[in-house]
Length: 215
Ligand code: AMP
Image (cartoon, rainbow, N blue to C red):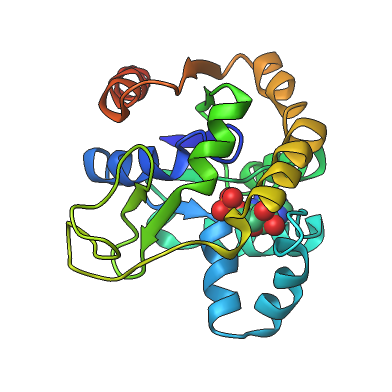
């Protein structure tokens, strides 16, 4: 099953992806995570990506398409994949189609999670995650039992540098301008499913599970 998770920053894509990959054994491909890892390892890709990420802007298409193309060609994607945070522009969506055509694959479903804008900002600004196991918490809505410590693995919790309010608002603006138009792209292909993300995590997941089980 070849799946795209769509939605603005703070919609809950990362949280849902963590649950989906346990229930459905397909690799979770998050371009944001790939860039953050590159930044942490100070690779040339990381140095290039950081300039854009710090400002809440998109990393150039050619860079992003290159890393996804390489990742999708790996053997663990043979049985399917869960794309999170890609594609984000029409150019990326068209490039993805070409890559998949070469690999004799296609997108089965694009799941779009919607959340009212002001809630998105509160979610992003309060978001912290575990450095070790990547579990996601929220200081306002879902705090860990002990400050700064992951309930699941005991790892330390950290805030993303681009989750400050000003950068978060810029990312939401970029989403409306460059990524939201993609919804029509997948609607036209007949694969778009839209669901409300301003609910309990397990309720959102129940809807996603239903969609994935019908594929
Ligand atoms: P995310 O973790 O998906 O919110 O992504 C964090 C940041 O990584 C974004 O604000 C962009 O700077 C960059 N990024 C992630 N995915 C993409 C993409 N598909 N295209 C361009 N930039 C991206």
